[in-house]
Length: 490
Image (tube, rainbow, N blue to C red; front, side, top):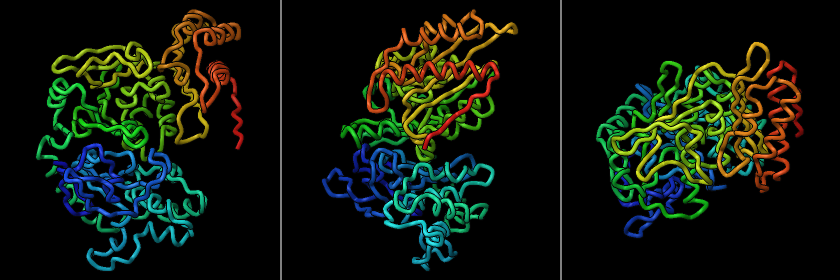
C-alpha cells in the first residue's frame, strides 16, 4: 500500500495501477481496480506537454533529508504514483489561506508567492501559472545558503503570454524572505509523520514493490528480472505518457539509503546510483567543476530534483548527458546481482543501441569516479541553451607533459553513435603527440573516420561531425591558453 501526505491528509493507495502518473491521479483520471475513477479532482495542476518539458504540471514534494524537511519541485505528468510513497505532495490548491495560524480560516487569502505574481502582473491566460506558483513556492522555502538562481528555479516553466520579466520580478520580490505559512510552521510535525511512514518498512501491492534495503532490492530483482526499476522516473515516465506502454511490475529504489549516498574515498568518488543530479552537484563542483556546470543544462530544475545518475547511465541513451563525461573520467560501475558484486569500466558497459552489459536481474549499484588530476572540459551543443536534449556532447580530458606532449587522452562523445563512446582512433593519434596544429588536424581526421552520426530533427550527420571536430579544436585552444570568443546568436 502506497502511503503519502496530500497536504496534511494521509492518503493510502492500494487499488490504482502502479504506472498511473501523479497528474492523472490528481486530476481524477486514474482508474481503480474496480473501474471507478479516483476521487481526487485537483485540476489546478495542468497537463501541457506530458513529457516533463513545459512545467504546467509542476507540483511540490516534501521529503525527509536528514533531520530536515526538504521541498522540491516535480513534473507530475511523468512521475509515477509509487514515487510519492513516504512524501508530502502539495498542489496549488493547498496554498491559498495557508499563511495564518488558524489554518482552517481565511481560505480565500493568497499565499505570498501567489500575491507576488498578482502584484507584478505575472499571469495572463493563467494556464502555466499554477506550475510557476509551485516553482516559486519551492524557491521560497529553500534555505538561503542553498537557494538557486531565479532563472534556474523557473527554467522548467514555460510562459508564452506574460513573458519572463514579470515572473522574475515576482520571484525577486520574495528573495531573502522568511517563509511564514502553515507548511513552515508545521514542518517538524510533517517530518515526523513522514518518518513514521518510512519506519513501516518495505511496501508491495498493485504491481509495485518498494524495498527498504538494498538486500531486499537485490533479492527481488533476481526473482523478478522483468521488473522495471523506478528511480527518478524522468525517462521511464515517458514510456507511459509518450509510448503508451503498460508497466505491470515496478520496483522503486529511492527509499534505499545505500543507493543515495556519496563517499569520498582515496582518489575516488563513490556515488550511489539513486543520487539525484541536484544532490550530486555540490560534490562535483569540488572535484569536477566543468561536470557540475553541465548539470545546469541537463533538463530543468524539476528534472534535476528527481533524475538520477544511475538512471541516466542505465537507460543507455546515445544522447544521455552524463555518460560521455564519465567516460572521459574513466569511471567504473559496481554491478550487483543478488549477493554478487562486480566492477566493470564504463567503457565496457554500453554494447549497442539501448543494450548494456547488465545481466538479467543485475543492477547498477554505484558509480566510481577517479579524482586524480585532470584537464576535463565539457561542451554541450543543443537547440536551446537550457532544458534541451544534446545534439552533440563532447567531454575531453588530456594529460600533458612539461614539454607539451600529450601523455594520456580521453575523448568521449554523445550524439555521434548508437551509444555514448570514446573516440579510440582519435585518442591513439593524440597519445604521445605534441599539442600542436598538426596533431589537431590528424585527430580531427580520425574523428571523421571513426564516426558516422545519423541525421535527425536535431542536426544533420555533417553538422555533428564538423561540430565534434570544432569542439576538439576549441579544447586545444583553451588548453594552450588562447582566448576563445563565444558568439551567441539570438
